[in-house]
Length: 312
Ligand SMILES: Nc1ncnc2c1ncn2[C@@H]1O[C@H](COP(=O)(O)OP(=O)(O)OP(=O)(O)O)[C@@H](O)[C@H]1O
Image 1 (cartoon, rainbow, N blue to C red):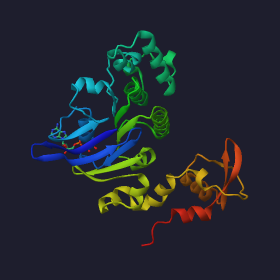
Image 2 (image 1 turned 90 degrees about the vertical axis):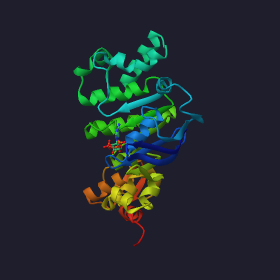
Image 3 (image 1 turned 45 degrees about the vertical axis):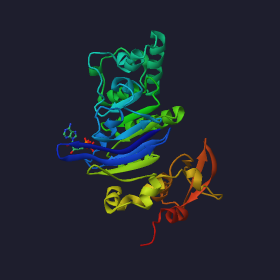
Image 4 (image 1 turned 120 degrees about the vertical axis):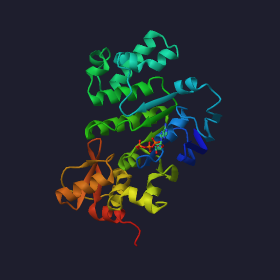
């Protein structure tokens, strides 16, 4: 659990982060969004003390983050950044095993962990563990950067635009991997992103920053339904709100009995996917399948009702 309490960072006359307070519960993912220069990275870097705050406190699992020497604190916190930050003269395996080595893990345990992570990120260990970073594509480097952040199974993971340079397909896969890992290990994650769709997909809570201030910190559905200000509303993109609302719910939550023609969608797909299918194929309803077996349908009518916002 991270408790950020009245944290401020002043550079010269500018308040890069201005009296921000928020709590991230253990096992939760907080997505921080905002315009460029709004203070997202500075806020995140004060958690692992790459930046020292001007005032305020940050507690991690109840302990002031200044109680430990900064290098020791950072060993316990995974950190992944855009542009990966890999050591260019170390192999992929050495890069991933950086923190386990600092922590004194023996060779066998380190090697096993490297192979496990490479497999998790769909990179065949035999092919990739001895490569140098310059022998990887941009997307592969990013995945290794995230693998390195996860290597010592940190309870806390900080991610600064970690999927920024990935193409949409790899990005979706990397987001899925992150969710899987996050659930499996109950990792507490703070993720900085400028992509609202990513924040809505991944965040249990979303923090919206502007000019150093935290404008709103709430679950995605609440941010969409009740934006705290015009600025938050604008950032959400009014035109996309209906679809964003639908993207929050799995098809399994709206299945009803009844017939429907044509190819089914999976019950794990979102209502947004269901509506897209219905519109694209001109149907009134789409069958829903679980593990390949049809379990019911979703109708166009109910989806449209669900997508309606509050009457203005
Ligand atoms: N070391 C520094 N010295 C002086 N000013 C800084 C320093 N680091 C950041 N700033 C300023 O603090 C403000 C917040 O920067 P920060 O990097 O936290 O924003 P951000 O929201 O992460 O932006 P982006 O999305 O563009 O990465 C900016 O105005 C930036 O110029």
